[in-house]
Length: 198
Image (cartoon, rainbow, N blue to C red):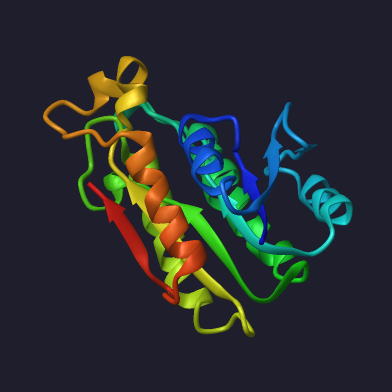
C-alpha cells in the first residue's frame, strides 16, 4: 500500500516508518523535511500536499503540538496553539485527505494518554486529545468506504529525557511498541477505534 506518514521524522513517526516500510510504500511528510512538506496549520499547505501526493491508500498522522503551562497563567492564544496545530492539523488532513484516500483506505490519527489521565500543566493537551477522539468516533460514521482510528500512546520511552518530568509515575512505552498500533489500524478492520498503548 502507498502510505502517507505525516510527522515521519518525529520519535513515533520514525518508528512507524521503520515498522511499515518493510512491506508498504511509505511517503514521508514533515514540516521541513521528508519526501513532501506541509504546514498543518495552513489549509492551503495541506491542499498542496495532496495535490503533490495524489491518491494514497492510507494517511497516518504522528504529529501535533500543544501548549503546556499552568491554567492560571494560560492565555487564549496559548490554548489556541494546540487547537490549531494538533487538533485542527489532523482534522484538516481528514477533511481534505478524504478526497485523495482510495476506497477502503484508512486514516490513523494520534491522541494521547492525557485524554483520560490529565497532568498538571496539561489542560490544553487533554482538551485537544479528547476532541480528536470525539472527531474519530463521529467521523467513522460518515466517511464513505473509508476507515478512521486513533492511537493514544503514553509517554514514549525515547522521549523521557524531554517529557519525563511532566509524566511523574507514568509507565512509558517504547516507540516500536507504539508503532504496532498504527500497523493494526492500517491493516485491520476496526473503524472509530482508539488504540491505547499504555
